[in-house]
Length: 192
Image (cartoon, rainbow, N blue to C red; front, side, top):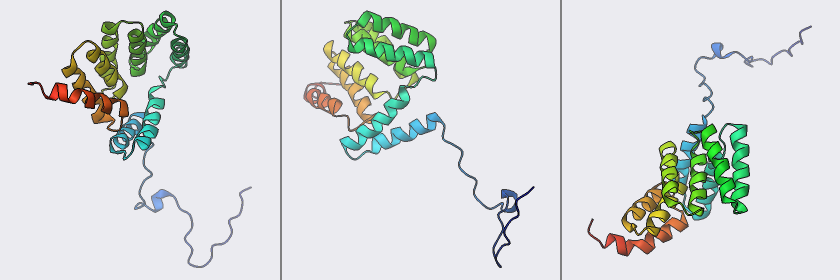
């Protein structure tokens, strides 16, 4: 049995379908993960303080940390535990599996780049950084890592380029601001 509706008071308008009110704006479609990430990057670039930027960067990193595959996410968690325990060969083996399972996941490549760097293999690390940036050109962590490797290799000019690219995405990133400051005189004073 249908519930009876209470009578409407005089002048009240009954609830109606959208068809009865074609001028009502439609609800915006839900944001895709990519659109949400784009919006976070806009907010990151416009952040007024390091604290605000750090909060936004944490949201970005949480999104980067999700591959969409439970298996890859589990392997990543285990790889990060191995990294913390300084079990680098195990971490790299697990990350090899991550990038095989989810080759389009930028963070898989980035984490393997970190592990390779810690293991003392800057060349392979830079190759994985390139893969990271191919998939996520705004990955400021990968840019920062590239700058660090280039600086260690004595290529201060290219390190500065990488650091400045990171700052273009994340202007409040203190570690990169300090690196740029320390290289500024040396690099900007040279002929281009």
